[in-house]
Length: 158
Image (tube, rainbow, N blue to C red):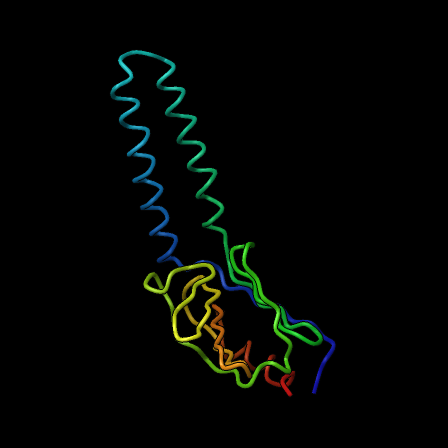
């Protein structure tokens, strides 16, 4: 039974990933800026370079703090996007089963992940749903409330 109403679900990056990114940002800033500050020997040019490098690092990493996985239940398909870069669209007819998936974290990573055994993840950490396709492949997608997503998805499946 198909429905024409679209539904969207968003799973932001988990706090563990945000803490990890903050740690990476602090290490990168410390590793690049501090040596330039300490060893510039009174030259203003070295200080400007260190500030510019620090600003570029922040501009590069800060958008990752706002990333999420988004699931859109469309009329004939499901669209899964993560980190605004990676996406897939799967026709409902290609989905053999849908169920609650594992809780993912730093070990599995974030973004588009090839997890082995024919499993592809669109992950930002935390709870997930698992879609088994008729081809035998499995798609994991991070969601905040798996039961809510499955309740909206299952009536759309053949």
